[in-house]
Length: 435
Ligand code: GUN
Ligand code: ZN
Image 1 (tube, rainbow, N blue to C red):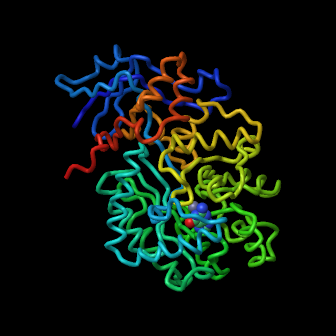
Image 2: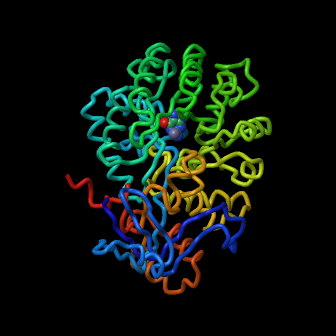
């Protein structure tokens, strides 16, 4: 079995940090090491302890003085929107109609899907992201391209083809039956194959008729183990339009509730403008609110309230939402998330940010037994980060005197340049697939 040892300053989380001094929430080894074997983590701890467990002539990747963390996790991203990023629009619905629904039509061509999938995973890895929950286009071929390319790299990915049968261009519509049939075939082929998981993906209530929502419900009943992903309460016009289309329901979440979409494997992107009833129902059903800060600022959608949802017991994820979002970097994403909480007058400390990018997002995806941690037995998805990656970071680093200051520097000034290496299933991947 292939073994390898990573040496560096090792950090992972074991619980959600309750304050900036909460050292019980993480493990940190100043002179630490992680032993990898067969794509898994065999051991993690002090270098002085781990070195004794190393087989003879085990290769060592010496990352000192950099930090070694679990790979970063992005629980809401549109792989088909790489060429939508930076599209100038007044708001969500204008942005969707003017750019996004035009761009996604290109994925009718499987070759386009295959080319973008390759670029997508290269880009994630370059940014230190090792797992994502991704939206494909309505075309089954785009989901095929997504999963095939992830499998080549042995990456743990969640994805699904969008289901849409109204309020979008004709070329992007499936029928309720077609959406059901194609989704079912994709689940049967990909869900649980290697490191892949499928997410049943009705794009949002606006683009699905009640007939399609019934098909979504049938799929959930048939495949209760699959994820569900959709959008919820991102923008005020979107909410008003949803309530026009579904007037018999008490609120936006009520539509999804009626069709059986709520649950602990259900990921609701944005979740900004929620009523008390909706917050309570999300908590009761353990439905996940996935915040997308760079997107919410870029599209002027609103300000996600971390403490409100967290205190209510709603599971939370934080994600890029490329291409509404403006960066693939989870560091930059947490920087913007921090600023949004500042506007709410909340303290969102850097331990919380690094928890969210790793164990927190793994928990939101119910994958914390495998990723988001450096526990022995978990998958060897790991990132090495350099807090002195740019001249200005190096200069600022000179006055850093604690771990949380270093994390805050990484979060505030860092991006892909701070990613020294990304290991996927124990393999260094930053240089590319290396076929
Ligand atoms: N709501 C429905 N589709 C989308 C999308 O592609 N991006 C964002 N940000 N919101 C959506
Ligand atoms: Zn989205």
